[in-house]
Image 1 (tube, rainbow, N blue to C red):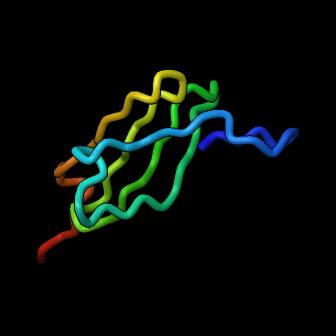
Image 2 (image 1 turned 90 degrees about the horizontal axis):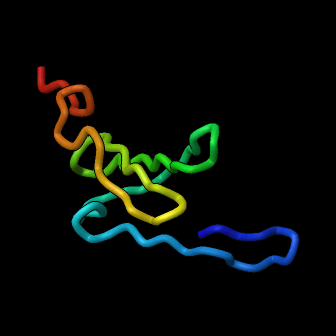
Length: 76
C-alpha cells in the first residue's frame, strides 16, 4: 500500500497475484530503486529466497531468481 502521510490516506494498493505469491510464500521485506519506480520484495518462504519485482506505477510484477541455484540452500 502507498500511504500519503500528510493526509493519512491510502493512495494506492498493490496485489501480488497467486502465481507469484505461491503457497508457502513469506513476503518479509521491501526495498525501492533509487528512482522510486520499482519495489523489490523478498520471499524467503518454502521455495528458497526469491525476489518479487514490482513496477510501482503499473502494479505489474514478476518472480526473479525462482529456482536459481544461488537462492537455494546447499544440500551438502
